[in-house]
Every structure is written in C-alpha cells, then in structure tokens.
Length: 302
Length: 335
Image 1 (tube, each protein chain N blue to C red):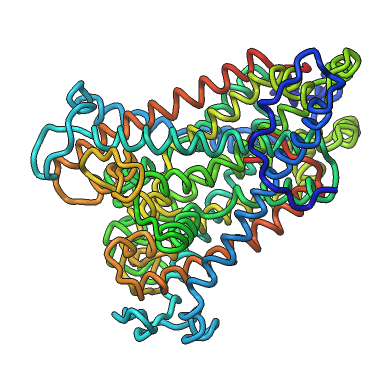
Image 2: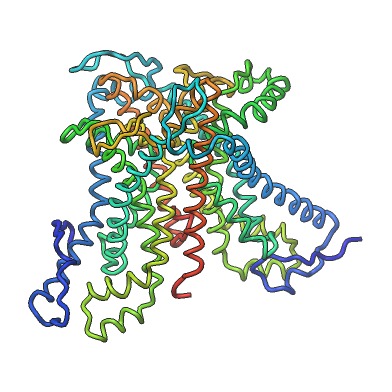
C-alpha cells in the first residue's frame, strides 16, 4: 500500500533508513508521529507570525514622523509620539554599550588568550550563570547599589545604563569567547614569529580576525538590551518628557513607555503602544538579522 | 597566577613602534594581561556585589519575619516607618504565583520543545531545517514587553478567553478550572510564558540531540527500526539529562520573567488554586508596586528579590552543571 519512506534523518547516510519498516502498526506509529511532530513545529511558529502580523496591523497606522519627534500627550488624547522614549533608549543604550562591550570583549580575551586556569574557569561558569539572573533582580541590585546605596545617585540615565550593561555583559562575553576560539592558532604563531609581543598579537591579529564575529555577538546583546524593561523600572524609572541629564532625573525609554501605555485603559494610549511595539520590534529584528548576516558571511576558521 | 587585578587604564596606548626591545615595550605585556584579567574578574565582583548588597538591604525584613516566616507567610501589609520594619511581610501569595505560572509554562513548553527539537534534527527536510530553526530563534528576540502587549490586547481577548470559557464549561467542577473566568490570571500568564521560554528550551534540547552518537542510531536503523523507534528508544533516552537541563533553564527564565507576567497575571495580592484566578508573581509584584512604595516596603520588595534570586540561582547552577558535563554548548543555547 505505502512505499517505504524515502525521507531520512538529515544527518544519516541514505541506505540504512530506507529499509522497509516491519508491521503495519509500527508503520502507522511512525507515520502518525511524523504528523504530530510536524504539527508541533507549526504550532511553535504560529505565535511569532501572529505577533508580527498584529504588531504590523495595529502599529503601522500610528507610526509617522511625528511619532519620533513629539512627546506623549495624556493617554486619552490622540496624536503625539514617543520622542522622550526614543531619546531615552538611545541615551541609555549608548552608555550601556560603552560599558558592557569593552569589558565583555576584554573578559573574553582573558579567558581565551590567558586561560585555562582556575580563574578563567570560574569566570566562564559565572558568566553562564549570570545569563540566567532575573532582569528584575538586576534592577533591584543596581537600585540597592547605586540609586540608594553608595553615593545615593538617585534615578537617572546612568544607573539605567548600568542595569542594561549588566544584562548585556554575559551575552557579549560568551559570544566573544566563542569567536576568539575560532581564530586559528597559526595566525597567533605567525604573529609571534614576526617578533610581536602577546598584547600586539592580540590587538593587531586576533581581535581584527575575530571582528565580524565580535560584531555579531555585540549586536545580539544590543538587541537584547533595547527591549529590556524590568531593570529600567527600578533604575531609570521612566519619564514622559525629554531628559538630557546624565544622572539625577528619571529617564524614559521606549519599552517603559510602551508598558505604561499598554497598562492603562484608554484606546489612544494603547494605539501608541502598538506603534512603539512596531518600532521596538523593527529595531530588535534589524539588529538580530544583521548580526546573523554578518556572522554567517564572515565566519572565520571554517 | 592573578587572582585579583588592579586597574591600569593607561596600558594599551603605549605602542613601542619599532622599539620592541625597549623597557617600555617589555612592560606593556604584563600590563595588558592585568587589564584584561581585571575586566574578567569584574563578572565575579558584580555577582558578589549583587549577593552582598541586596541581602544586606533586605536583611531587616528577614530578621523580623524569619526566613521561612517570610517565605510562607500569607499576609502582606506595608508599614510606613523609615527606621524599622513595622508591617507584616509574607511572600507566599507571590511565591505561589511564581511557581504556578512557571509550572504551567513548563508543562506546555517542555513537550513542545522536545517535539520541535526532534523535528528539526531528525525529520525536517534538509533545506527547511535551517530557516525553521531561525524562525524559532527569532521568537527569542521578541522583547518581553511586546509579548505582554500582544498577550493582553490580542491573544487574551481573541484566543485565550474563548478557550478558557469553553474549558470552564467542560471542567469547571475540577478545582483547578473553577470559574469565574476573569480574563487575566495565572493561566494566561503561564501560557504566554510557555511561548517565551520555548526557544531557549528548544535550542538546548536540539544541542543535546545533535551530539548523540550516530552509530547507535545507524545500528538501530540497520536492525529495521522505524524512525519513530530510533527517536524514542535510542535518541531520547540518552538525551534525558540534557532535557532535564533544558527544563530547568526554561524554568529559571519563567521564574524571573517580569513584564509579560505583570501584564497578564492580574496583579492581586491574593492566591487561590484555580488557574483562572488572579494573583502576582514575585517579579511582577516587585515591578508593580516598586514605583509607589515607601522605603520600608522597598526593603521588603528587596527581600522578595533575594528569595527569587536564590531560587533561580540554584536552578541555573544545577542546570549549567548538567549542561557542562554534557560538553560545551555553543551559539544560542549558551545565551
């Protein structure tokens, strides 16, 4: 009735899986499992498409030039935009990038170029562990350390950036580490052979060779950082006005403003939240896809 | 062996061009090493500061309620003192909300992630496997506030609410599904959490399945097994510990997730067995009340944070140890 299955596991050599299965029941089980698993795959992808569709559908009418240049009116009123949030996000992200990416890459350099030893092993382990820390706890930590703690800096742009930087740091470190490992030892040896010192080899040979990969990891971390909301609630605190102060005044951000807009009951504010969701999603998507593209085009050592 | 490194910020600027044997050039190497080692220890310093600072901040609350009194106390009344702890702080309603939403998320996401991982590694047509896994990974890139917005303003009214009402009609006699259906509550928060943790769990399960030795699978095929038999009898049993690790890492994510849960769980301070009921998770309660809280209550919220941190740390470290013993993870499973 049915021909032996011709499709095969992706990784397996062909002939072994083309043996005709035994009884009808086994064949039936195999078939229905295939159907069920394909169904699971489809089910797993449905939410993404639903989200993309709905964000586009509700957001596209809201986003116009004014959305980026005007601040938000009270939630009942139409019009206006998220200028305060965009400036806040830009400000916070710029600071967070300056803090997390150099430190992350330097950590990876130490782990790869000077390891393995006990210290690098524990750095690697705790970097991994750090990716799992709840984002709200990072907010609490920065609140306890900087907002009310040492110096009592209060809410503001800088403490928000510290929180986002702490969220981004392990992501940068982890991916930079993998990229540095891909740099072939021949390149290091060639550099040593020309008389370069270790730091010169790292700065002028290893890091440039790994640059595309480092860019990929950093961009993925940025994509993650842009959308973070919870840590900012306790550090930047949020603001509906454009804030240029480095520290001391509550600062807004797009996700924070989006959350506040979505959580109140007025239609106009919710519409603007969808518009912000579209912008945020587009930003994250651009960073994620560009990161993958750079990474796949310029993969070293392969 | 450097265990602690002083900061030496002026190092990489000194470039001894053409004078490699000069004393200054020789000095640059150790300085560079100390600088990167210093950056490396920063991770450890940050983690240590986290534990010390937050615990110190929350200590008065633990001291007054007792650690277990705090965890299992059911009453949460804020006091308004600047110097001492006057309110009653029992975090059980929030701990319950955290556990129940995470449990719902795992129950839904674990089987689904195993199925998706198996499909991607063993069934997907070779040309489709890569775009499909990219799609699943893309789901991980969606910011959690967008999940919250979409969950609250589209998924809940259009899909979940009708489904809950049907479910309540069918199983309303059972205490877990007792009405009334309010819309927001534990179940919608758990379902959206399941969608959110699916990508990382799939990534880890896939990672584990891919490294299973091929010869056993080939031998099984050679003996006439169907693909389903190879998957269930050869691949999955030996992937068991990896699947446990995936479940734990997903659990860790679900426990700590804030914004999406905050928008969907309802935000009440009560707790009840019905999955349709509203409540708060630990993270969502912190986020919801922190802005307007007085200093004393913020101390108590800090204590919730410490408890949350402890739970997620234990789960994460256990999971990481399992994953590390399986071999190094790469790519997205690592993040």
